[in-house]
Amino acid sequence: MIESSPSPGPAPTPRLSVVVPVRNEAGNIAPLVAEIEAACAALAPFEVIYVDDGSSDGTPAELARLRAERPWLRQIRHEASCGQSAAVRTGVLAARAPVVATIDGDGQNDPAFFAALHAALTSDPAVGLVAGQRVGRKDTGFKRLQSRIANAVRVRILKDGTRDTGCGLKCFRRDVYLALPYFDALHRFMPALVRREGYAIAHVDVVDRPRHSGVSNYGFFDRLWVGILDLAGVWWLIRRRRKAPVSREIV
Image (cartoon, rainbow, N blue to C red; front, side, top):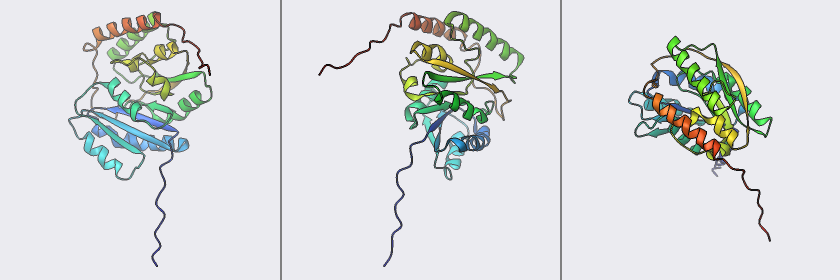
């Protein structure tokens, strides 16, 4: 008599979904995946969702190679580049965990901070978002200057209490994110919009690193005027927010 081995049950629901938006980052994928795996070991079960935003290099093949031995690694591809916010949203929509962390795919963000971000979020139900704030920036002097100016203007207008919304390291409640109004560049205005929903924002200082390889896919002048319009739009959304009604069905 041949005994059949029991079929494996369904995979456990992950505690944490890590979303990594990438475009043309083939050389950075393997080192970052290894770091994420080590950083998330204490947060298991977890899943990592790479969203390939229309890459034209070896990014898809590299992800397919790494997925062969990593059941927790998922790969989603945009047929054409739609931008970082669209890639993050695609990943969050696909996420199976109630808590989502994001990280840039260029290696400048250190996954070792996931544990601190996750703890700050899950220890207080009033917190909807934990934002990483970079120290020791490794960008060029011009990029640091433009970031400093943009952050100063945003804080003055939106009063979101966050000095660095451009950091890719964030941790948030999936349902809170999905309640936010979606638009391109949403990821840069999350603290203001999460506060608009009535949640507190927490912050964790994170150490910045130089990218492993490749060049930045995001420029300054191509998003300057769009960023000004986005800022005005978010200001309007905050001003138009009204108290949500408390309701119950009468039976």
